[in-house]
Every structure is written in C-alpha cells, then in structure tokens.
Amino acid sequence: MRPTAKLFALALLLNTAPAPVVFALDLTKALGETIYVPAYSRIFSFPDRSELLAATLTVHNVDPQNPLTVTKVDYHGEDGKLLKSILDAPLRLEPLGSASFLVPSNDTTGGVGANFLVEWSADQGALSPLTEAVMVTGPGTPGPSFTSRGRVISRTAAE
Image 1 (cartoon, rainbow, N blue to C red):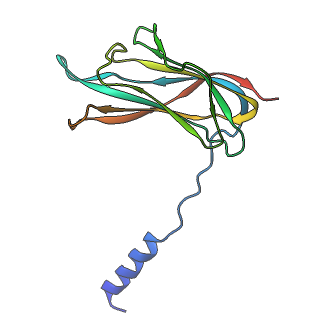
Image 2 (cartoon, rainbow, N blue to C red):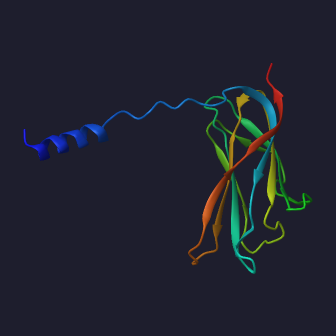
Image 3 (cartoon, rainbow, N blue to C red):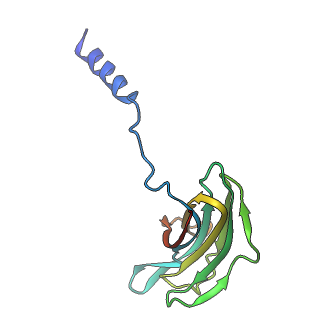
C-alpha cells in the first residue's frame, strides 16, 4: 500500500472512532429547587461603550419520565433587587418539555450583572432541569452571543 493510501486509511479510521462515553454529573432526584442563572443585558467592549443584549432564559425538563412545575421566574438587577416576576402562573413542563422567557435587548434595567431566579417543584422526585440563559445582540447587528448555565442554590430532596 502506498504511503498516501495508508494516511488516508488512517484518517478514515480516526474519524470513525466511537465517541467518548459521557456520564451525567448528578442523577439525584429532587422535589424542588431554586436555581440562580446569570444574565447580562449589556456588556462593555470599551470603558465608555457597551453592547445591548437580549437574554432568553430556557428551562429544559431533562427527566424522561416525570413532569415538573415551574413555580417562579424572577428577574433581578445587578444590585440584587427584584425587577419583575416573569411567570404569571405555575407552568407544567412535561417530560423532556421546555419553556423560554425573553428579556428584550431594549430592557436595560438589569444592568451588566442581572440574573434570574427559577423555582420548580414536582409531585414525585425529578431530575434537576437544565436551566440556561442565551444572550445575543439585537437584530441585524453582528456581535457577541453566549450562554450561562444555572446553579442550584437550594434543594428539597426526594425521600
């Protein structure tokens, strides 16, 4: 076999290798949690110039068998004060269901270090939902986009 053919065969072999096994970090079930999610309504590119961002909070029920109920979604400013309660009524998420909440780019009340507090509950133990915020610049303007992931700050354990 020629050297180029050997290299091609090796490249094919390397590109078809099985993906590494990934293990879940926490499969502990809970009856409810409070989750803190950082969000940003603006970021600074220079000391005197900032970019406005829209923030979309999404709560994903990753449990394939158990529903959960989102009971609170609050948006707090960088000073920690409650700016608004986004959820009007409890919202049931079926297994593998999701819900999203938008803070538009023209809402600058949160400041640079805004955040969401999300509370959820379940009738029987459920996996912790994946809770993320996606921040993007306004329409028609190329600019930064990024995500931040929630962190559980209180939990009611399932027995």
